[in-house]
Length: 171
Image (cartoon, rainbow, N blue to C red; front, side, top):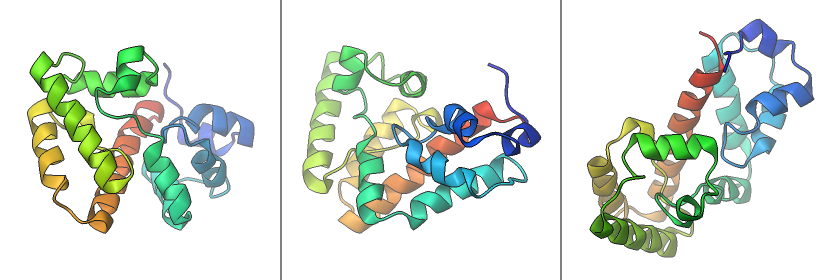
C-alpha cells in the first residue's frame, strides 16, 4: 500500500480522511472524524497527537468503549477469524497465532481474569513485545488498580496506533 504524504492528508475531505484513518483506532472511526477538524498536521506525529487529544478529551464512557473495541489476545475473534487485518498481523508478530495448547489455556484464563477485574480487555502493543513478555505483563498488570490499568491500556492503544499510522503516512 502506498503511504500518504502529509500535504495529501491535509487536503483530504472528511470522507477521504475517514476512509484512510477510520480504522487506526480499533473499531472507533469517531476518533478520525474528530481529528480531521484539527488539520493541518505538520507530520505523522502531529496527526497522532491530534488523535490522542481526541481520545483524551472524550468522555470516560467513550474511552471505555474504545478499550472494549479491542479483541482479547488470541481470543474468540482470532479463533473465528473476525479480527481486523491490523490485529491479525500485530498478534502474529508476537507469536500469538502459534500458541501451544497450554499457552492457549493460560491466555484464555488471563483474558477472563482481566475482563472480570477491570471490565475491559487487556491491551498491549503486540508488535513491540514477544509472547513471553506479554504473559509477564498480563500477570503484572492484573495487580494494578483500575485507574492505573485503565491508563496503561490507553497508553498501549496510543503505541499501537502510532505504529499503525507509521504504516500509513510517509515520513
